[in-house]
Image 1 (cartoon, one colour):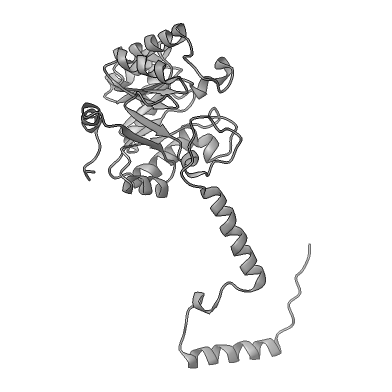
Image 2 (cartoon, one colour):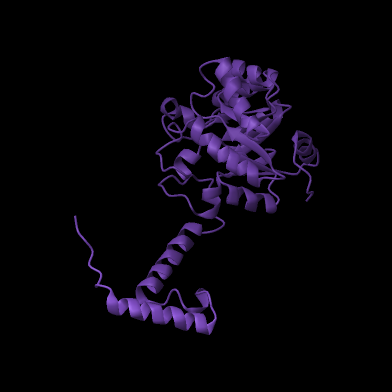
Length: 296
């Protein structure tokens, strides 16, 4: 693994060697730092932060102000990884001007690229952003910002007609200048067909092995997601949520039993200074009225 910054050229070299790119979401400085140290190639600051970090029921409630906080934190931690910022709902759909302005804010905050959902219907926005010099990744298949139209979290591209429409959308994004497309929740053979039809990178999240790299949500990877959504493609590599609960219970038990803090957790001072302070405490205790909280 090289210590050099990952760029589009780095990703192209991975594809040429038929080596999969490693792609994980992050929303804060510590996670980005740990992923960067682990050698992850790409980090997505996803609008999934609405659910993973803010407890919202879907991704529609998060806006640019919140996303920029997450983006800046991640970019401080990601020294090597290629960082993609996820444009939130209505930050690019309304006009070319909005798309360029908001995507530019992500780039100014440290992102290497931005991501937006949709195919032919957002191709004009993608062209506006790429004409402004902003690298754009598309997102097709299950697109969470369009859940109402899709009928919920459903697998996409399950028939030839359906995957043909995804191919057409992907080609529209490629023609508009996108450097990559992310496919979410589609069958492996469907994803392979899309990749066969494109010259740009094709990454997947729940799209099988026949793509150029794999994205996972860090909270899914770590077992830290709080919620009922657990797609088939999720694989847990840790149980951080369980460990946090266990640690908090043990800490609470130690505090309540007087086991924490123990002497090793306290700062030592010179014996004579400790004796003087203890004497002062004793004197004050003898002369001060007992403590009685005043209730409203």
